[in-house]
Image (cartoon, rainbow, N blue to C red; front, side, top):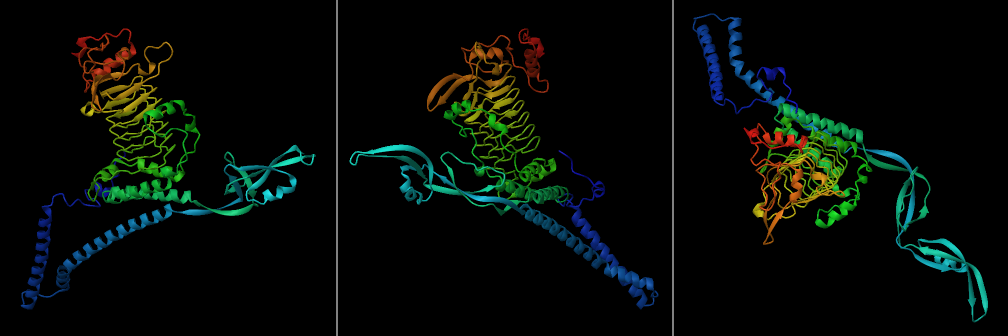
Length: 557
């Protein structure tokens, strides 16, 4: 984050907005000083007048000027105070006008003329009839009717012994219709069972669209206001700007208006099989966000450390601190790379395919959020809420997922290489379905915490006894096996098979079941993880040469 800019007045110790809470005892002293100064002025003036009236001195122009200056000093000081207050009010009014003007520009629209024609489309399952040519008009008088074909036919009448032959016409009648505008240069999109009923003539249509250029200018203006507010008035208007930008994103990219996505949205055990049958080919098949919405997200995410501090110090009613609210938004394919969204809410948002590499989401709320297919290498999700969130087919290499709250959180075919996990404690040993790691790649990941209730279902290739996806994993201060009580029943279980541990690294801090053999290459003592981080050193040594690695106790000395 960039530091606050300093000017000459700040360097001299004269800030634009003084902190009156500092050195409060100086206030009464200054008041007494100015009172004595004014009193001294009046006494001096009285002494001069007395000397002139009673012959002790002679009147002069300088004497009169001195008397006028001393008598007018309080009024000059009071005038200066009034001017300072007037300037402050003018400044506040100017900022308010800037915010009002920017907000008006956020709703800017423009009229665009386009050439199109109305097209009526008949929909539904049609009723079909076969008829002769002489009664065809009877059926065609019905609305939404059309001749769709004909076939040669013969008919023998046994009573008259006559033979009729000729064409029978196939008539279809559709139950409903809808009207669209076909724009010039575009094809008509028809669904199954639909046909074009009537096509109108080409004409000019006036269409209203958001004026993206003006809106982008307004967003940049609001960013400047937020920065100025942080520099000059402790960020009072910064929070207002963030509220405006968040509301703009929620209104212009709502999650409920996002088109259907070809991937199961549920985070249940039943939906895992559907997700395994689905592919991630759709990730690159959709457009990016509208330019103004993307810019608003970028402005929110590139706040400085001073701006974030102003948000934390903001008080509104009973709420302490302000946090970014982007809940229920459509952020598919949004570019959030290296931006800061700490503590933000993405509750029930659609974030499929978003670009989040290096972004910070520490403490964020992703409950019921669809994060399918995101690119979030080296992103920070520490202490975030991931209950009922879907991170299937995502790329999370090197991501920090320590302390995340999980429940029915899906990692189906997710790339988690070298990522870091610290599962929170398993409350009363009763947690159920905390997270599903199904056919994910955990190679080289670091895992801490209580793993009971976490599902590891990794894919093994043919003739593999240990899945490649578990190779190189490091376990420390975690419980791999133990006892759980689920719905009143006691279960002795292990989160991963004993055989898999041969391809991992751990120390004496890892809790196993009594019947689980501890791998020979695991040290029988605890390796420190503080400043020396001997666990990291030994873990990397083993990864570099697992076949020849030998744990030696003196390494801990």
